[in-house]
Length: 190
Image: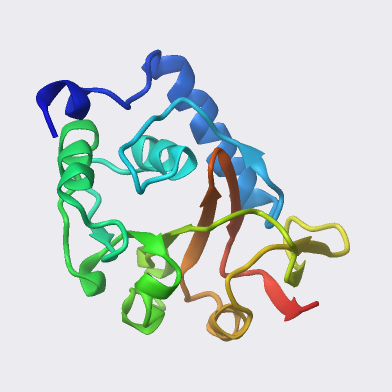
């Protein structure tokens, strides 16, 4: 990867685009399963534009990041180093993790917070092939009655909910689409 490619892919208008991306991240987490458009980033493959925008918005030099094997390329590391400055760490030390669901396994190695500090849990950014078809019914905070969403599996998220207020949170990205599943959400198969 040459220097021009490393420099490319960030927000063209950082103030406005990062504000919109931050709002999309907040909306996604506040309304579990609802798809939010998120644009502005053009990271190197295999990172989706939505995942790239989340990284540009929420990850910095104080945010330990784990890259699953599916995302851990030289181009990815160089792009993250230049645009975010995040230290790349083992899964057990990560505040954020990026990868395909299968490559992030086992999710039990990610931090779930502590009774005194539940906010010290990891946030997973899960790359998905698409936002459809729905596979789960979601209920809980931020959902009026129930909502259907596409998740890579059900059991891990149902088990994660039983640990509340501990547990990991997830963003899911496909192209320029973003949706989220906080640990407070009840999940059941359709």
